[in-house]
Figure 1 (tube, rainbow, N blue to C red):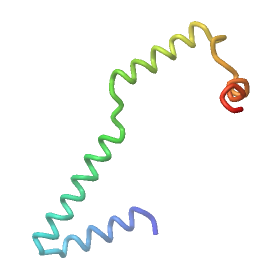
Figure 2 (figure 1 turned 90 degrees about the vertical axis):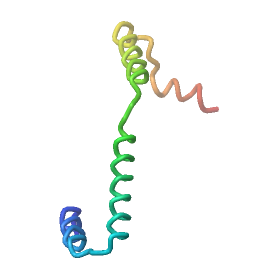
Figure 3 (figure 1 turned 180 degrees about the vertical axis):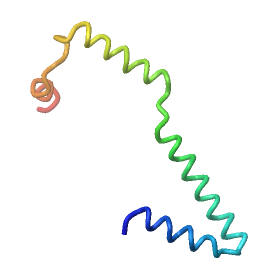
Length: 77
């Protein structure tokens, strides 16, 4: 069953709910999910700047990069 069908079924079931405690519980879960989703994608500005600085360094001096196979040899005995 695809997600849109599941959502539609849940919405129809929710429309029939009259228990205020159940409604509050569902609302709490939805609020939690929204907060979690928002926090999962927030990257601090200083981290973004750090990545951009490193990217600029690579653009200016691409030979500073190591070949992955060579780097792997130094990391793994």
